[in-house]
Image (cartoon, rainbow, N blue to C red):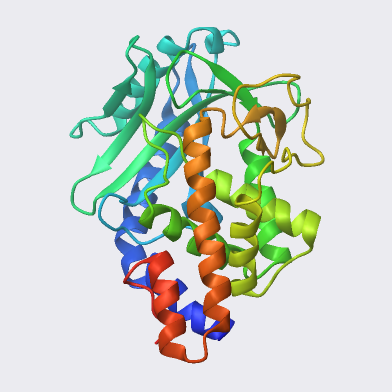
Length: 328
């Protein structure tokens, strides 16, 4: 039997960050914002300085999941750094400044700094032990042209950087939500499936990032028609992923072009810059694994639609999304 949007919204509400839980996180985020606003307003130093900030990631895009097991709540905080037009050529200096800046705001906290094997900084994190909230710090350097674009260091270390637009990523997400009221529900369900099947990227292994999932769902809406039915949107995602030789995914109004050659088995472009492959780390073996798991999900959910009673249908869905799946 087919499941209605009402049925699936019961599950979506279970896996999303609950309103009653958001308060404690929001309070900490607002406190951090207050500290940043005060620091930015009072900071009269010469040279490097933070000029503004943005909250981004799943929190801002309304696709955040409730914390579970190895998947805590994390929020991306983008810090715009000015005062040295050449700082993007010295990423180590940029991160050292960010750590020092945050220690001035939170002298009582240990600011976590993760580095790669060569000593390049991969990430800087503020961790709130009381709630388990992690705030991932993303330093960026604004560019004069293109307008609203920035240099951003790679989150995988290696000393590399790329050009993107945080504001355009956020406006793109907002447009998707406005055009499809089921967009965030479809994305959340697929992110839960990814976590349950251990397909999330790690330091050691590539996978399906939240941004990758959001872009694929958006690409399908734009190119195959907006799908507001949650069940059909989920199934369409699995069908697309499990298809051999999926097309290069690019978006209009983004700058640059896809490189003539690349090493990854697929290419999914950042919606603001075609040069940025968000699955650049993907290997043939890992992608084959993802295809296999997605194909199983596609076949199972199609079979679930053919089952004659609710109990059997739910069991099929549980085999894909885990024992927490239910509709009542």
